[in-house]
Length: 160
Image 1: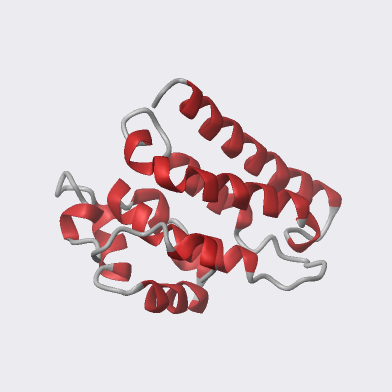
Image 2 (image 1 turned 180 degrees about the vertical axis):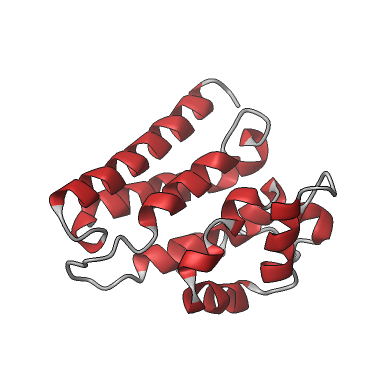
């Protein structure tokens, strides 16, 4: 976990209602089963076991749980090999998972992590060779992160 994201997390571990605020979301309940009660260190280890399996949990967990566990995604993407890759390392879908968390209702609670989200978007785009085996795949990943950054900036400007 980077120094940049270590200071972003709330003081306590998210509870089940932080993952599933409405209490009836099966996807949020799955995110709770996969990450509930885990420290950031443990959550990073779990995610790295199978990023393809766990990435969508970040789309569906509640805002407060996402706020706490965002460093998992940051750590994973920044830890990708420092070389060209045939795999996008789930970077395309992760951009969409993060984007799903940012909307007018959540912006106030996610404001503290917006600089880290924007920095991660810059990192992925600046290191695009790590995130796709060919130009088309890299362009697709880069566009997803560009769109995410634009969405976050627009929400900030709208006073969300």
